[in-house]
Length: 305
Image (cartoon, rainbow, N blue to C red; front, side, top):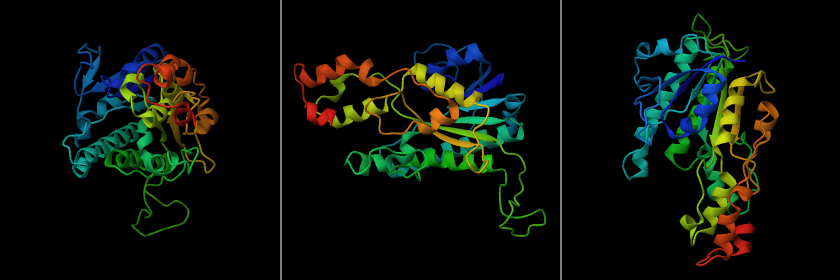
């Protein structure tokens, strides 16, 4: 089992959920651009480093001797025009590359990276909620209708490059070769991409008049303990090789939700993920109040269909 794990974005929202478990299970190296979390509390032992910096020598030493990396770092979007979100998301793609590359150069065995359900949210927005698709498999071609999802899909494909071990189609002489895996790389670094759903408490009052989004978030809910389990199993799983021998795995990061429309099959089969929570149970009172309470705006048929 891996002993030493580096976590990026260590003062962020998702890290706050998984850190207690990771501190118990592993020796941790925590990295972020700041030392305080969202509650303005100091997170102990955080190494300050900007992983967007193209000079990887500035933080390469943090990756030395590490068995696995959990990448949770993310730069927030600025500006109201969604067409301009490309520029911030491109920086996130650059950061993902720096994490993969620095881990690869340091001999790290596996990177577990926070992706998002938005990597494939075109299907949700156009098919799932129109009842033209029931469940989305993590290996369906990722298609997003926004730059946030585009960036997450880029993380996933980039992870496949490092997991494939070829890194190109030219041999050492520069000749193009399209058979036999002639690329410059030789080592396969494992990559697990976790498409996180809705890791937040769900309050019915926030969804008054909007039963569709309430139903959606009930299906997408991810509890802190389930996320901690999933990320730790992503680190610990002895093998993540697909049927072609490539150590690359995409899983959905949600709980065992009754209303889920994302498949947990790959997480269960490859990682042994056994989520403990179901939003239908956890938020039963909120659902009941939404349907029948004062000011209720959703009918049983619409929310429960």
